[in-house]
Each structure stands twice: as structure tokens, then as C-alpha cells.
Length: 265
Image (cartoon, rainbow, N blue to C red; front, side):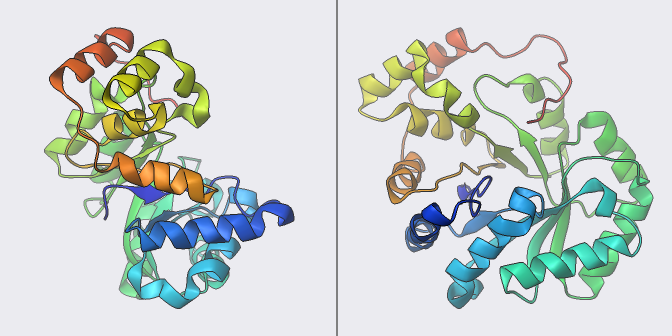
């Protein structure tokens, strides 16, 4: 998986924005951001349809990630959900298919169904989203040793996973996909972030994204619904933060000293 991808939450929901969003997706791919993250939940499939319409002709260049509702992560229903997502995405396979969050379906049943989809060639890899350490331990014990990723909320203001979950995943070589690396824009006016950005000639968003990607095995998937934001986000992959920059950000956004339950949006 590329270390920087394109998120699609809330995309495809407004007809007036469709052409701009399609252009942004295509620009992102042209700039090397070939990981595309989406979900059946986003606009009830509207984001998947947008991606299919925008990128079907370059499908083989992409690493497509989609997510199933937890109620669909069950026997029979997961196959139907996956096939519906594939239809909207205009593809014959999904590169990484995730359970969006944990519901009432037993994890062993979800693992069985994910492995069946993989064996059938409908997905290449499977993983989870919004699962904390205890859930991940249970998943592995339920036969989920092939879990390829955990997509979680992780950014400067949501550093809880650093205390336990990130080290646990790293020890097992399970990549982390960090969603909302700029906290849906709320981080961008924080004085410490603005100060670091001004000092190095970057934008606050670029600094926040670069910070999220600083750990090995962490992939950032910021949403970018415009060409301007795509270019801004892409530049974050080339940004180098100094020890002093990290120290300033750590002072403003301290790492937790105790376990904090995983948060989600």
C-alpha cells in the first residue's frame, strides 16, 4: 500500500461538486496517490460510484480500499455487500476490504467470510477498522491472522493509540491506516501547528499529514475533494520535519501516559 492515499468520505453526495471531485481523484492518481479509500457507508454508496466513474479506466494502477457495515460482515451478507461495492466501483476485485467497525457479528464468522471472499478472488486482502487492542487480540484468536490492516482515527489531537495499540500492531507487522489526519480541518488553526508550518514554509495540513506518516507502517488517508487540496496533501509526502519540529508538536499535543480507549468518528 502507498503511504499516502486519497480519502472519499462525504464525496459523491452533491451533484454540483461531482466534476471537481472526479478531477481531484484523477489528479491524485496522476501524482502517485493510488491508494483510494472508501466505504459502502459513504453516501450510501455514492462515494464508491464516484470513484468508479472517475477511475475505471485506470483501475489497474489503483489500490482500492472499501469497507462493509458491521451488520454486513456476516455469513451471506458480506458476499452481497462486497459484490455491490465492486459493482459501484466498476471493478472485479477490491484490494483491501475492511469491516468498518465492530458490531454484533462474531469475529470468527467475519474472518471466515473474509477468507472465502479472498479465496474466490473478489478481494486480495482483508482487514478491520476502528478495532482497539482487545478486539484485535480476539480477532487473532478467532483465526484472523491474515488481517492486513487496522484503519483507525489517529492524528495530533488523537494520540491515544500510541500507548498500546500502535506498538501491538507494529509488533505483528499489521499496517495502520490513519483516517482524519487533520481532524476534519479542526487542527489547522492550532497555534503550534501554524507556527511549525510557517517556520518551514509549509501549510498546517501538510505538517499534520507528515506527522501522521512519521511512523513506519502508518498510512495517511486525508480526504481531498478539490485539486488544490490534492496538490497540498501530496506535498506532505515530501516534507521532512526536524527534531525541533517534533518537539514543538509534542509539547502542544503530548503523547498519552496511560491507556486511552480508541476513539472513532
